[in-house]
Length: 285
Image 1 (cartoon, rainbow, N blue to C red):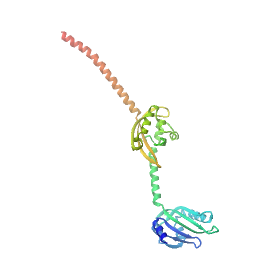
Image 2: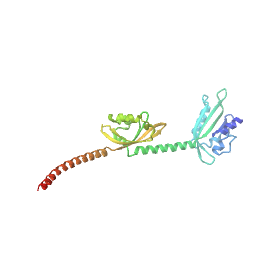
Image 3: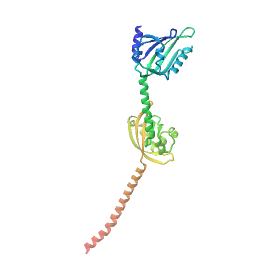
Image 4: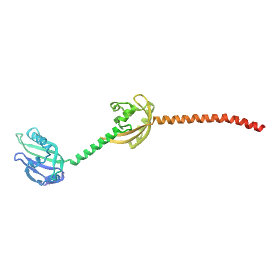
């Protein structure tokens, strides 16, 4: 009895013991603490439980409960359902029971525990909503974006903007690695980056690369990547900015300035020659 009292005090579950012969249910410690009912450490009818199972779940729960009892090969029962607390609020429950049978296989007793997983489920729902919002923001972002596994370098997610820019389908992208969009002349530089400590330890990396599109067009991009973890896998989330036109315009401006400087030097020599002649004639005169 002392061990039982200590074990029930140590758990956060509501322990129960159901005598199938007398149809009496004993609620141990935890029932009042979890759900607010006064039946803790009392013997009550099974209806003290079944009447408080959520109306939308009770038929399913009782069906699985009785099916397990009636099946002589079953020694365990488990169900997830909603349960009404004394204050009118709803708890999400995982209920597990162990079936004890006589020599003929008839169920005579069942002991188990109700676990309140409401907080855990709420956290999971929040996490799911957060993930859904992230996926919406990721897929609808105007900037090309993707994620890839830092170990295999395989793409794991890619948004619509990246598909539009590079010309690959989503299915094609997800069979490719970062090397597949890098021209041969950039491969050595990429390999060197991957071998550096910064690649696996620096949260943010901002670099400029040449990339090759599906139609073999070479583009110049600025990539900003962050280390993230998805389902226990370390990945990099990459945002791409196509700067091909900017770099092309910059090159053209530099080339133009170079030509202007050459023209200015030529003109300088052409102007200096007649001026020198005039100065010489003036001196002579």
